[in-house]
Image (cartoon, rainbow, N blue to C red; front, side):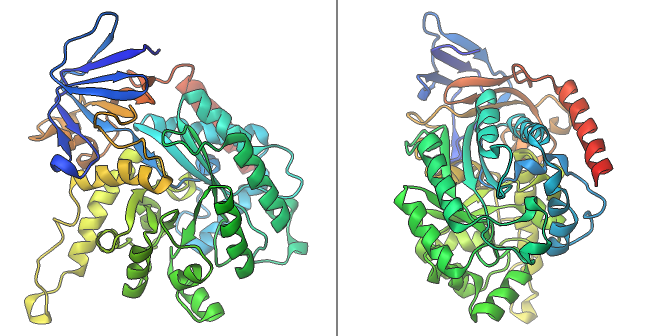
Length: 473
């Protein structure tokens, strides 16, 4: 349901996702019209305006998820990969099931992932989608946009792909075979013509995103893809430095670090962001900061796969733009932005404590409890994400910004007793009741429900799909 003007009233707390004013706004009211935040303060209803009573509610900017693999939404908790690190897990789970996805299963997986995200208060999803192969019988890109459109979400397709694999092509089934460079570029150009909107409040974007720079393409192709993507006005994205294997491969193949390698092939800059960036040395951190390259921090997947904890505070201090991504559900069984930001808050503090040394060994602190505030995490997960995606209209909760707003009702016992309710959605974990989610000024979630989505039916379909995948495997 939408109206031309909406007034959110009696808000208890507002976190803005911005660095100014301590990351908070007094409110208690927010007026939304024509897709923008028109006013914040003590506001009286206008004639014909829809009034949403947000008494005792907490308002955040809608989350911006900058790295996902939606097709993995039907691969959660696969026992064969549950206790494996990245390289072995890739073979055990996503690549083992990749060929099993037909159009119906793929659409269902995308819907599940998008619904899960929306119910956490996420309004923008960047999916690093790499399920492409020669002769593919359905258009997975179109399905992703259709499903996001149906829910009213902003969607950024990071068009993954590979022109080579780690195995001999002759040994591979068709669904694992690589594309040619020409076919990859041709499809990116097609998608850019059909979907890409360069505007600051775009609902659809395309990004050039080969799956992994060190493994998916030849070095010369990597440079060519950067130039080709930029010629179309597209941003660049990929995985990098997730585990020590990236360090080992870059040193063994090219006698340099992973960040040095991508820098030599035109894959650093303010129009580039990488998922993970867990394993970095000081020189790499400085190089990422000097070039204004961004990060999609994925703490839950990095923890689940035993990869480590990205040095987010050091990266931000160096000049790197920090955002948050949930990564694929096959390595993150709770692929939503509430659980992800909760993990980001805790893990940065844990890393600070892990790095602490006693005074006799040169240490100067006991732990890392100041390594990340709730306001930091909200900023990373909202306006930080908008910045790496180039969505300049998403400026958090401020007058003139796009009206992408999540309204949480903290009516679960886990939030009772909070001295500062504003921190509840991130600090207390769980999933708070989402009273409203607005995207571009339109209500897409109301009273924890998405119009037209039968959650029980979706669950039945998911269980049947998992049974069929297990039987086929």
